[in-house]
Each structure stands twice: as C-alpha cells, then as structure tokens.
Length: 356
Image 1: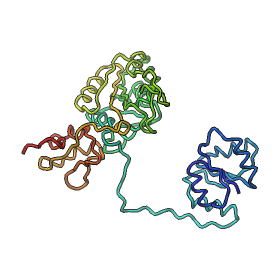
Image 2: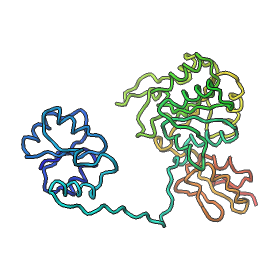
Image 3: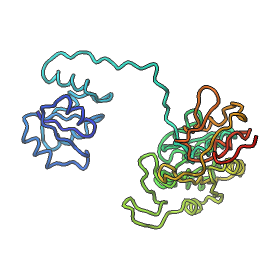
C-alpha cells in the first residue's frame, strides 16, 4: 500500500497506516508529477488521503496512475484517525465500529475569538456605537467586529465586499446611513474598484480603510502600501489617500483610532457630508510591530462603579466576570481605549499617582 497525503492528512495516515509507504506532500501545488510516477511505480496500490475535494487524486488520474481516494475517504467532515480506521476496515473487508463523538465538556471556559490587545480596529468599532448606521464588512481581522461585545458589523461577504455592499445598499434605498469597512491589504486587493464605482455613480456611503500596515489575519505579509515586497525589497509605497482621490473621492481624511473622540467626530462629519468619503483609520498592528503603545493601565476600584463600560471594547486585557474588572499587566499594551470609555476616571496609567 502506498499513500499520498498532504498537510495534516499525513499525520493521521501515519498513525493508522503505520506500515504503509507514505508520500508526504509539503505542498499540493505545483504537482510533483515525476515524484508521483516514481512513488506509484514502487507500490502495489495507491490511496490518496486528503481533506475536502479530490485535488491530488484527480491529478493522479490525469497522469494515468490508478488510485483510490474519495471512493473510500470521506469528503465531508474533518478527517481524524477514527475516520481513517473506518477506511482501513473497508479496505480489509472488516466491519467498523461506530464512530462515537467526543463528548462536550460542560466545565470548559468560553474562548470566543477576539481582536488582540491594543488592536487599532477596536477604536473604530467603539466609535461607531454612537451612530445608527449599517456597517458592511468583509474578510479580515476586523470581521471579528460582528461578534459581541463589539457587535458593530452587520454584514460580511468577501474581500472588497465591505465597500461594494455599502454602495449597493445606498443605491438600493437603504434609509439609514451606510459605513463600509475594508482593510488596507483588502483595499489594494479588491477594494479600489468599489470605491471607484461609488465615486462614478454618485454614492454617499462612508468607506473606512482600517490600515494596520500589514496583512495581519494571514501572517503579517507586506502590502503594496508597506514599501516592501514580499521578499523584503524596498519599493515605492502606494498611497491609499492618493488612490482614493484619483478615483474621484474628494473627502479623504486620516484618523488615529486610539483617539476615540476624534474618531467619533470624523464619523459625525462624514456621515452628514452628502457625498462619498473615505476615512483611513491608521494604526499599526501591535502584534506585527511588537511595540507597547503606552504605559500599562490599572483600575482604581475605589472610583470604579462597576458599570463595565471598559469591558465593552472587548479587550482581552480587561478581565473579570464577577466583581469589578481588572486589567492584566501581562496583556495590556497601553492603548488607552479602556481609559477613554470610563466616565468616572477610574482607569489610569499604572505609574500615575491616583489622587485620594
């Protein structure tokens, strides 16, 4: 038996078919055709184990290599050693034991996905709470704005869809004002066309480019706006501002998302402009930069009224389900958004002396 397995499928195959010859693929494409032929020539039967579609299996058929694949390996559901043991039983004409689902543990703490401590996107969502608007979005770290406690994104479609959907909703007659959100890498990838269409067809949505200076969600790759290629070579940095003006957008402004009052003021002005506008929320991804934004913060529990406004920015550093919240010194990077949310002056930089 010879098994061809890419990615995590190799680990499962190694566990279940420990005595088989296994061709482990470091990547699935480009196809290593010569390697496929060499491997198939050394084994009596070939089985392709891969998740989802029969991508590698189809290539082997194209090369004229007989093989089993999705006729035995499930194409739906996550692969696991248990599922592959059932595949082995079929190959060896044995009855399989039913797969028993792993029971859910009732006592595990909830761990919803959240934006990182100090993420600049958090300030944009906090500011948008002040306005009764529809917020359209697309794919990126900022997609997490759809979930509580931020809960300030109404739609998610695809890369570039934040701006295009905003324009479409305006033209379809949505009575409320519409704000569309795209990331900087998404803007360069597929957001420019929506902005151009909005200027050309006289839309009046407000588009927000949350510019964190990197492609944060998928591994901090550089963008055309970073001034570097993916190989680290220096190149001219594309300007989001200049591109927007070239598309015909006259109202273009840059805000610091860590300044909550200024960000709110920008939204208030642009939502009443009556023409398309672009707000660029510019703040580098702290995970990529690995820099502390300011002093660690702490909560003075004598001043704290437990209103929990600080928890509504969804920062993992602000903790505490029972009793008054606290700020984790291990997570806080000093962005100061929680301090701006507090109306009682209970949150201060840790080195500041709190007045009695």
